[in-house]
Length: 245
Length: 245
DNA sequence: GAAAATTTGTCCGTATGTATT
DNA sequence: AAATACATACGGACAAATTTT
Image (cartoon, rainbow over all chains, first blue to last red; front, side, top):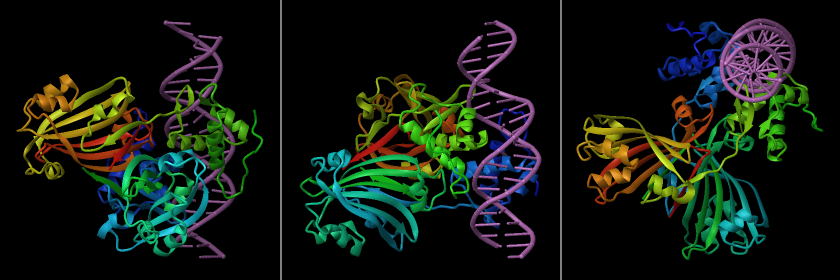
C-alpha cells in the first residue's frame, strides 16, 4: 500500500504540501473509493515517514479546499459534490429557478423584526434612512441540504403581515401575491465571494474555510419601485449562477 | 498594552479561536493602524499567555480569511482591500467594463497554442470535438495588481493570426476587429467560487486559502455564432460582479 | 557590504481532551 | 467500557527571509 514516490526533504517544497498533493491525487484516482475515507492520520504518517502533525497540516489544507472533511472519532471523509444551478435574470426566483434540480425545497424563517432602515438598506430600497423595514433571516434547503442563508428587507408600510404569509407559504413570491403585488422583477445583482464566518458554518453545515458566493440583490415591482433588498450567502460548493444575456 | 479580557481555557471554545476573534476585533478597531501590522507572534503569545503555536493557529485562520498576510522575516501584515466592479451584460468587455476604476490595465499573454477542441470547449463553441482551436492563457492586471487569470479558446479557422494581433493590442475586442469581427456579445456566463490552486497563487500573487470567483463565459457574433469560450479566475477579494436586468 | 537580530515557517515529540465506533 | 481517531495545546529546534546594526 505504500506509495512508490516518497516525499522528499530539503527540496524547497514543504513536506505537508507534497503530502497534500499526493493525497489529492490518490483521492481523484479513486484509491480510497472503497471506504470513502482517507486512511487514519497515524497510518498516513507511517506511510509517508513523517510526524502525524505534518499529515494533519496536509489534511487541513485539503479540508480547507473542501476535498475532505474530518470528523472527530470517525475519520477523514472524502467529499463529493454536485452543484445546483441558479439562473440570474429579470425573472429570478429562488425556488422556481431550481426547477427539477431538487425534489424538495424548504425555507426556514430563523428570525424577523421590524426596524428602521440603515444607510445601506435605505440606499438599495431608495427610501429615507430610518424608514421602517421588515427584516427576514432565512435558511434555504434543497433536498435536505442547506444551500443559502440570507437576510431580506422590505418596506414595512407596503407589506403589512408579510411575516405571517411568508411563514405559511415559505415563498416570497406567494407572500407578495397575497399582499397585492402580483409580479416583481430582479433589478440588480451584485456577486462577490468570501470565506464562511461562524454563522455560515452553523446554518449551512459547512466546515471552517468553506467558500461562499454572496449576492446582494434588489427586486422591484413592474413600475421599477424597489420592493426587496436581500443579501444571500450560498455554499459555493453546492451552487453555481448562470447569466443568459 | 495587555488586553483586559484574557482568553479562557476549558470553555468548549478553542483558545486559538478566541485569540483569532480578539485579534480580528483589534484590527477592525484600528488598534494596529500605526504599523499596519499585527504584533509579532511571540509578543501575542506572551500577551495571551499561550504558546506561540496557538497564536499561529489563530493567525493562520485570519490569513485564510484574507484579513492578514504573514511575510517571513517581516511580520504579519494587515490587508486592506478595494474591489473592482465588473458589470456582466450583453456588452461585457474586460477593460472597458472597468471604466475609470483603474488608471492602467494590462493583459499578459502567458502561453498560446493551436490544438484540437476537447469535449467541453467543443460544446461551448458548438463545434465538432477535435476541430482546431486557438488557446490563449492570460493574466490581467489593473493598476499593477493582478486581477484575473484565464484561458480562452477561439475557433482557429475563423481567426488566423489572432495571437499576434492580441499580443500587440492586449485586447480581444481589438484583435477581433482587426480580423473582421467588428462586434460581439456575451451570450452566457456561469459563475462559481472556489479556493485558489498553486497556479492561481503564483499568477495572481495570492496567499494559500485565497478565494476565487470563476467564470465560464461564451461570446458570440451578432448572428449568435460562438466566437470565444473563456474560463477566468478572479481574485475574489479584488473584484465583484454586477448584473443589471 | 557583512553580521546580528528579528520574525515567520517547518517539523518533531508529547500530552490530554473529545467524539465516535 | 474500551478502543479508535481527530482536536487542541505545549515545548523545543532549526530553517528561511527580512530588517537592523
